[in-house]
Image 1 (cartoon, rainbow, N blue to C red):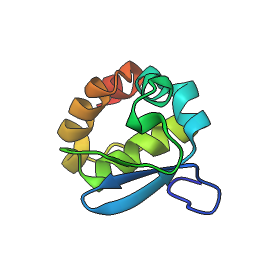
Image 2: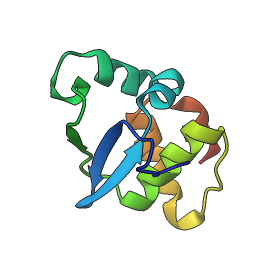
Image 3: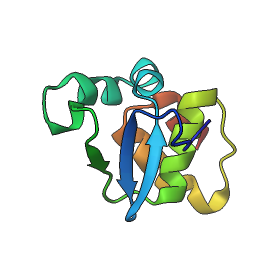
Length: 98
């Protein structure tokens, strides 16, 4: 389900590559995404690719995995970056796992 373009309704660009997701899942699980999608700004429009700067694709996919499944395996190599990203996106439960 994570990063599946067949049924996605939002596309992020992370490290120059598309990452696909479902707005409803992200908005329900993360207030940061909910605010982004209802803001009335460019990111809230359908079909717009949303750039994600300063986060590696591997870590962004871990964030999505967590939001979709409520679990994620935190590897040591990604722990610090994942902690920072979880803090940025205000996902305290994920941040605490790091």
